[in-house]
Image (cartoon, rainbow, N blue to C red; front, side, top):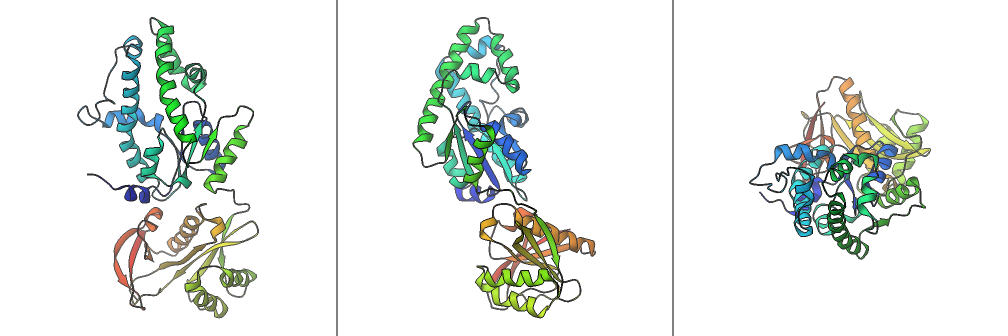
Length: 365
């Protein structure tokens, strides 16, 4: 089965990629950003053994190539070594993409992987990938001096002729990374070149700026109640936001407080102001009285998108409904692939009061 590129990109919308050349700093920056934002990290190198066990010689011949020892491993020609490395990356990528689709369904994932620009074109948008690059020099020594690379250091030193093994490895990696280094620098993709005078924090800040990430100060989700100051603040937010199709309707709902029983609004606040909202309702814009409760009116200010604010609002609304004893919640949408990220599944198409068709999604609570 072959999936078109647009399908892969849609299912990987929650994944941010950091790639680049050898010793460019991608692993260091990935870890720094993951820790800062509390985002799960997926490191392709850590998954190779798992994927190798799932592979077979017919479909993944390179991944299943075995070597007796370091002498046989480094005894290959440079061209053979290069083809083996490229074959491993190509064969493992299918496993990686399937993992990422599953892991990123309802959360943002930060992925540390080896990928070239041509492959990036097929699986993601330029705004969601950063390349960390370094001029290919003394790659083996730099690589082997890292604490997390000591198994490889021990392996290459186990070769009968260490200097010869090192020369083969150095030439192979230099040729591969020189091509990648030059291609990335001349591409339209975002890249950061390694600078030992720049701190890890400063380097990570360049990448997070590219991704459009920023920490939300004093982030919280709050329930809105009739007649309180927060309701007035929400009304002002609605009167000034860009979602014109629902602006008047939602403003009227707040002014006259047309919510009954357990119906209510939730707002996301950060930096001392409302940045998003969501509601839980008995009815939405559909003649389906037997279908409820609805999680509706999910909106996040454009300046704060990409921070999983929508997901936090939806999660909070669903927890509220779960506490009330509901077993499911529903969301309507004219989009495909959006609410699946938050654990919702397509049920069927429905027609709203305006005669337009939408998709109905449900989630077990």
